[in-house]
Length: 538
Figure 1 (cartoon, rainbow, N blue to C red):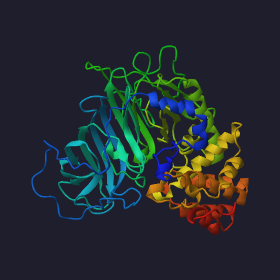
Figure 2: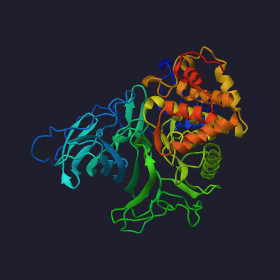
Figure 3: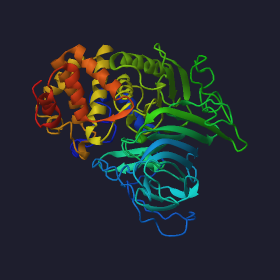
Figure 4: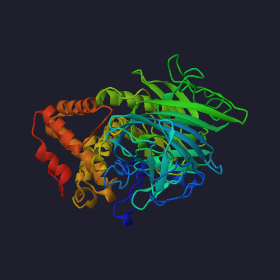
């Protein structure tokens, strides 16, 4: 992810997604658009402040079961309370009716398919601030109760260890953005014509019940109904199965319905993803369906609603591309954005290994936020405009962060340091500063406390998205490249993305991969760059 530079008075803490400093200087005109992008109508809340009683919720008779329960947290101190234990989610099917600006902006049904990893008399889901109408487990009504950001579910009978089960939660309300004193505002953000959704690290459970921690990835299906005239775009690809089949339908777009404006038609080939009008109902709504075929962390899920121009096609290397842009943003070319997505995807495929997903692309919305997020297959960008190095950063995350995901947030440099280094490589390829110049510029400042006083491999929650994670993380990779040479360096990266494809990883596992592939013992090198304070030898 990328976003604004930190405020000096906050000692390096900042909003969760930042534009790198150099990019921010070049993009001043784009950032100025944030001030006039339109007022947000969504309110702000803090995580864990909601313990509302749910009126009219059907509740089975009898007390909650007293038997074994799964842990109510993943135990990650960087995101206290997030995630749960006792089960492994395999699939989320989200049926969502979204009415931006309505009395209730969201009416949803989440069907969660999971496997019990222990015997469970009850289990928890993460959910904040929404009303729950009912919960069933394997078709039988389940008891449910709320506390903070937890939805505790007691099935009609305990789930044996190893059992596959299906929980269905019907819920509604208006999701609120997360307002975190350290990480800033993110999540479900209103735009002038719809909704922009970017959830790192803890915003997913503000709009759907989930096991909201990246250590539990799952596949997704989205069925999204929106008012006619608006388009819904999510992760993955349009599901164009015939009507009446599971996941049948296609996402909404096209002339006259908020999609591609007249004269700006998509360029899809016969096998390319298509964005076409579907299912116009008598109540002036349209429904679209999207499918995510590869496992995805919950914070990477997105549903963006508004009026978009859309391009579809393929990269030169054959990867399907879906690109969307709010046409109200001045000075941003859909054609240029689409072309850039394709070029960068192919370039990173050469350097990092085969592209790990079934489509690529991106979406720029008229959202009054100063950040971008690497939503899986479809990074989302706020109204600051088109910055090529930020696109390079977010697309690099498809390998580093999305396919190879975190098991714990402490290792966030495995996402952000790698994406920052990719950003520098794209700048060099595009005729800007070289990678070495980026490194030298940062290294020349020995008094930079943000870099040298914060260990990159354990930054602490307050510096989860600090400069040490981004810049010193990128510097660590360049120092590694100089230590082992270009050939072994890129072999390390490609071995990492191949061996950890669609799974979770930790810093010690990366160090082990680097040692093995390079044939060197790099433990002392990584200790100095990742875990010690002070400026390491270059």
